[in-house]
Image (cartoon, rainbow over all chains, first blue to last red; front, top):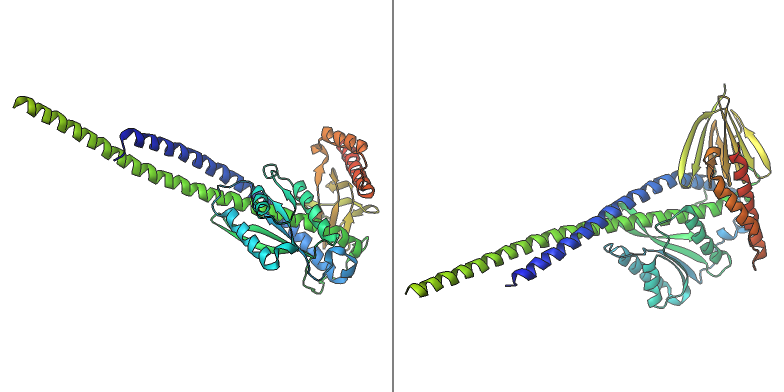
Length: 284
Length: 132
């Protein structure tokens, strides 16, 4: 049986770890709530934007916009949204594995990567994938501007014809306990060709110019959505992981305390036995 | 008084302005007004000022563009950014103006110039409205 001092030290270290995990859980919970709020705020804008685009798109000629251009797919780009930090359960592992699977089925040599988050960058760098750009260290002060900045270079990559399709992989926030890896096609934009419902509408300056200014906005919002979803998921995943860690630490402390008490009692018993047998030896 | 509903939506917020009587927006080729029973439509907006009139009270807002969707006496403005005149940080706007003026035009002349001009326009616009 381990000696008393060892057990006492272990209990101490487990307790201090538990303090850290508890604090991390609280921090993640606060951050997650903020991200969720932002997601809700962004929703009306993206929905209205989508509606408007739906209304106009059937009436315009697809071919005049490079962003709507459907080409034969020879080369793809993947945007992978992971996190900067670990300690968030299987959050990073899931998305990176899914991304690698998807990329490898298409062929690693024909894929360009945009990595968002340190974990994604490091993972694919180590495996020697073609990384065009990576964005790290912006999560804590993430603003709509960051989404615009990231979006711009990705869109440029498509418009200049370097790739024929852009996919985005990110963690979709279902609930605190559940996140799902989602893969979506960002470009070329696809819309089901519906009849526009209101025909007698005024469009100014013209539908073409409107679409031209709407689509970049739509992409920015899309990007913003991906970042928010992923951030909320990351924080949720971390919160759950830390919650588990805290409970595990609690269990460990319980076990160790039991062990400690047993050891203490054993020590007392031995000591008493020694005293008693010593006394008996003397009296004989 | 004939009124209509106004909603201002941005990527980070939703501002319900309630019933208003008159709205003036910066269109791409000049300002235009919207009143009760305006024809339905979608109109793109540029950098400029928005005037909102409610019961004779006037409110000024600065925007960097977006568009406005008009349907039966409901107007929805989708704007990239919007700031009420009293909330504008003049110091920041002045700094942005200075920065835009001194911005160097690099190798990508057309894009850099366009970006500089738009930054300049935005800063001037915000300063102007902050004084209202």
